[in-house]
Length: 448
Ligand code: AMP
Image (cartoon, rainbow, N blue to C red; front, side, top):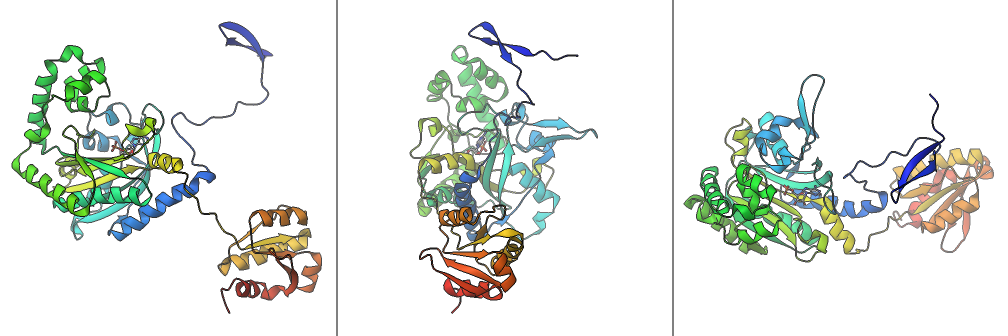
């Protein structure tokens, strides 16, 4: 079969001929996914370092779970009728007939691991943290991606309200220490039983106004009426202001638990707002639920929570484990990154002390060895071994603002020496190659 020399394209409704491009078309980025480029890594490091520092300071240990889990984990854990499971799960069947999904969130996998490894036999509570990518086949937009990163902490095996408050505090503190002021919106959604009664009240209320609901919300009315409270549709938002509030349906125990959470939050100085219509979109929550919102935000991000969490006392049992009260939070690092980027923070430059330059093949070999010695002794060095011209290498050394350059050419190899150049003054000295590390350590004040 011969290929056409020209292909037809449509432009302004008219067919035009475009020349066939040579070579294969470049493969693009998958829709809704994004790369984190080297230039963006310093801000990501700020978040990763802060997550590690605070989790460890508050007694959490790191956990990593696989990206793939059995689909049933999310169907049972997160809930069959939630948006996450119904619309956003990346699922597939393997040749062996396993039904697997890319994780859309981390709480169910953490509880699965807790049950699987018999962690209920450890001293309770078990406190774990993670930084992990998650996947949701959501409609991509600013701050909403199909792969996104979460930082979260989970406390398993404890129902004391101080845990709920401490978790909300920790999420808030993480962002505060990164320079982002947030407010915690908080509510209690009680037990599954009280929630069922509340759902009935909500259905009765919205059914009386059904004609004004959008098609999407009409579906929610049948399947998952609590989700109408999260609807972005203006009509639903207006109706919501008169809707029954869950706080009137929760039992005395849940109320008392919630009051204590709020008392602890007052004590910890966390700014919070009660939000009677906050329900969160996942089935496993019970009692406390909360979300974090930035106090100042760009228009595109104003509606987006930077994170959320709450108590999930029934989840372990739903997943086949023993009853285990638990609570946690998860923060969306991609969204926090967008805030950090807007803040124009000074990013600390990666400082390097020494540039190892070389001339000729023998020089290059010796320079490789010297570089390795410097690295092993803890001196920050850089190089450009693929370059030949010494001028180019010295220019690079200047650009990296190094203090010293070590230069090894054919002559130095033969003499067993190296040239040590002070980049500020431009002065050079010949040093015994075996003593070069020692000499630099002395000049850097690392030894006397
Ligand atoms: P959720 O448990 O669904 O409330 O998610 C917890 C947090 O993860 C949210 O508050 C967001 O910050 C973040 N998040 C959720 N979905 C996405 C997404 N598609 N893209 C980026 N971040 C997300």
